[in-house]
Length: 99
Image 1 (cartoon, rainbow, N blue to C red):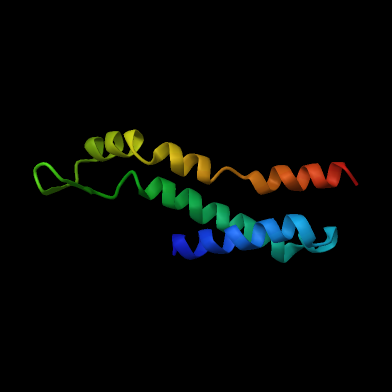
Image 2 (image 1 turned 90 degrees about the vertical axis):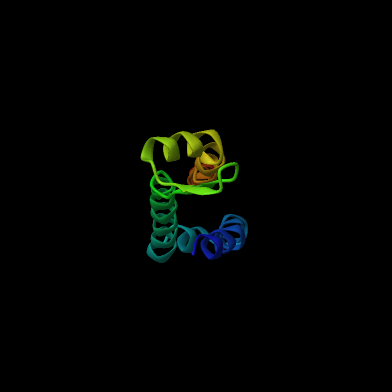
């Protein structure tokens, strides 16, 4: 689900920023899509603190919350956090300010 959403965002958001007129870009459907996309991303980020991982040295699945949290913070957390930053809102505000 996340891959599909990220692919759609990869295509739709740049098109919206570049080519859509302001009424379409600030319309209810567009805003709903962006908010839903952001909520799903935030939920995914939070769920990653609860999903176990495989310790490749010992070949076991780690389900201890503290170990999961530490592992996630050391590996993909920064990438995921940067990935869910609402850059489209910044562009929207800049576009409205320039009008």
